[in-house]
Length: 335
Image (cartoon, rainbow, N blue to C red; front, side):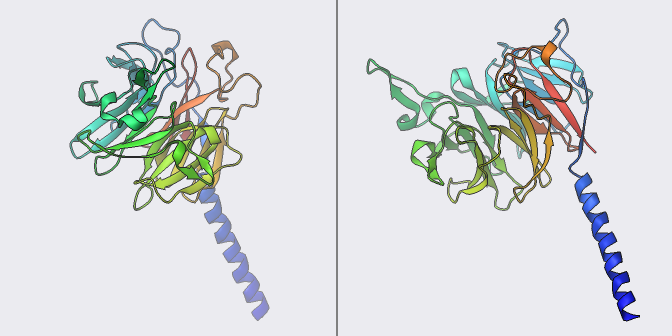
C-alpha cells in the first residue's frame, strides 16, 4: 500500500511538472502575421531599409528608411501608414524610450555622425555632434595626413539615469557614454578592450538591458559573431553566446525575454539565462541572407532575408525590419 501511494504521488507530481513545462513552453511560441505592414501612399514597398524598428507606448510603429527628410515612417498597430517624420535618411539605429521628461526617439545618424534626441513628432530637441566625441577616438588622419572624422555611429540607447550610450559600430567599435545633457563622460570597448581574448569588432548595436539589476549593456559584437553583456561602465564582461549565431545585429527586450535580429538569416528569442528558446524565419538559401538585394518576388512567407532591426511591442509580439533595398518588415505574434 505505501508503494502504491508513493507511485500515485510521483504520477501526480509528474503531471503537474508537465503542465507547468507546457505552460512555460507556450510563452515562447509565435505565429506569423502575414502581410502585416502596409505601404505609404503611392508606393509598392516601404522603401530602402538599412535601419531599425521600434514601438512607442501608444503602440505606434516606427520604421527607418533611407529617404532624405522622411527617414522615419510611422504606422498604427494594424500596420496602416500614418505619416513620415522629417528626419534624415540614415537613421541606422534608434530607440523610443520613456524618460522623466517624456517619451523620445534617440537615434544615430550614420551619414552625419551625430546622435539626435527627438520628440515623437520628429522635432529635434538635442544633438550630440561629432566634435563632442573625444578626438583620440573620433578623429583620424587620411593618407595625406589630414585630420578627418573617424566616427561611424550605428546605434544608441539611454539608461535610466539619462546617460546615452553610442556605438561606433562601423568604425572601431568604441562605445561612448554621454550624460543626459550630451556631455561626454567616458569611452570603452574598441580595439583595445578584449572579451575572451578578442577585441570589440563591428559591435553593430548596443542596448541597455534592464532585465537585470543593476542594468547591463548588451553588445552585439557582429564581427566576432557573438553577444555579451558588460556593466554600464564597460567592465565585467559576461558572454551570452559565441557559437551558433548568425551575426547578431539588433535586439529588444520584453519581460525576461530578448529577441535578436541575425543578419545572416534568422530571428532568435532568448531567455534571461542566455538560452535560445525560439527560432523564427530561418533562411538557409545561399545568396538570400546578409544582402540588401533580394527582390520582393523572391521573398518567402515567414522566411527572413537579412534581419537588421527588431523590437517587441507592448504585447510581446516581435517586429523585424530587414536590410533590403525595397524595405521589408515581418511580424510574429506571441501565442
